[in-house]
Structure formats: C-alpha cells, structure tokens
Image (cartoon, rainbow, N blue to C red; front, side, top):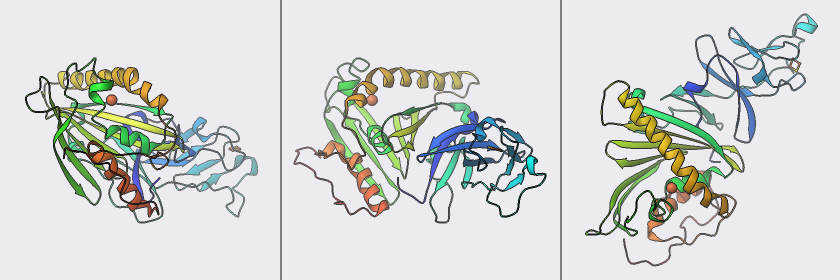
Length: 321
Ligand code: FES
Ligand SMILES: [Fe+2]
C-alpha cells in the first residue's frame, strides 16, 4: 500500500447509528458516528480484553464495549471502567483513532504519518448523489490487481463478447495525458470502419480511484482499498446524466449498478479466479501498448512508494500507438 494518502474505506450510506466492523489496511476496525454524525474509525478490539467494539453501543460521543462496559471517546481515550469505579490512571486502556473524514458520500481514512490535505476526487463526484447508485464488496485479490483490472479495456471484446458482440479488438486513436497524481487514457476499441467500435475514457486518481466513462452520460467511479494484504474492498458508483426526473434518475443509476454486478460477477470474476496471484509487482508482465494505463499505474506506485524496482515497465514492440 502506498502510504500518506486518503483511501475510501466505507460508504456514508452504510454507516448509520450502529457501530460497524470493517477490515482495511490489514487490520480490523470499528466505524461509528458521534452525535454530530462525525465518523470515527478505531481498532476493533477493546484494549481491556479484546471484545469487538463493533458489538458495542454508541453512547453519545463515546462507544461502549459490550463485555464490561468500558467506554472510549472519539480520540480513543478510555472514559469509563465501571468495574473499577473510575478509569485507572496510566492510560494503558486507551484505544487509538484513525484520521478520517467524510466527503462525496464516502468515509475516507488517512493512511500514513504526513499531514492530510483534502481527499482526492474526480469532478464527477461533486454531482448530485441522486443521479447515482453504488455497490461494494470484498474480493480476494490485492488492491493493485483490482486497480489494474479497472484500467484494462482491451479485455472487453473477449470477456464481454456476449454483451457487446462484434466489438472491435484493436485499440486505436489512443491519447494519454499524465499528471503527478494520475492520468487519463482515451482511445477507441476497434478500427475506424469496423462494424462496432467503442470510444472510452479511463482516468486514474491516486491512490485508489478509477473513473470509467462508458458514454458522456454514463460514467462510473471505482475505488479499490486494501482490506488485507490479499484482499480488497471494491466500491463503485454509477453517475447518470440522461435525466433529472426524480426517481427515474435514481432508477437508471440503480439499473446500471445491477447490470455491472451481473456482468462482472459472471464474466470478470471467472478470469480473476484463474489469474496469477500476488501484487502488481509480483507478476512478471510483458506489457503491450494497450496496457499503457496499467504501466502508468505501476510507475506511479513505484514512484510514490520509492520502490527500487525498475520504474520503466517492459514494453514489447508493437505497431499501433
Ligand atoms: S473487553 Fe471491553 S470492557 Fe472488557
Ligand atoms: Fe470486465
């Protein structure tokens, strides 16, 4: 994982008044909200004797452990130890607290030491959430592998041929625009004159977001955050710009989410299951030009994590540009 970045860790919608258990960054956490709705993210296991605080109750601005009723405030400080009358001095009972923030319908956690700025987001994410719908799940693959799959367009005619029959296979008219914190890749799938071609645009925003424009009016944003070292929390949200009609706009986005889930689960997961294990760095890739966004992601990871691995991924000669 590349540190000193904001990672989305949960959706705002799913975090209500009850504490919730999540696994992110290879650790178990409890997420809860204070009275003013501010989200809190703390190690899940009670410092006293290890009960899951996610089974506890929020009491005002504190969380109460289900086992012996110890309480912790949003900074993690132990504020009550009922069996002792008062909290024993020395503070060994204090919990910790992650730096979290809430924006764009997501809860974000700051992973690292440095000073956090604002969470990174695509312009699209400023849009009215009523034009959107979302879903999330855990997949048993390293998050770097999940990001690369979101940057992979040229699998479409092969894996999704039944949904898009006759789609061209060659990547043409590619343009690439690289920035410090990401890049945009635009191209066509298929050659001009072919029966079915598809323009597409994918954008990466460090460290965990990918935007995919399927059409100008239908786009999705995908996040891939480390759950454990071998699994990822995948979240995606569709935004539609076809209509502002109440209900219809939600319905279009919702339908897009359902379709995406059905297609990905039936067609992509089959491929994921068989792929080489490990992180993006563990696999000895032989990149071709169409893999440009995946190479750029790998370069960003190398740069951002100060990796000693060769910065320039291997590219085999190819005729198209
Ligand atoms: S384990 Fe939490 S109060 Fe005892
Ligand atoms: Fe796919």
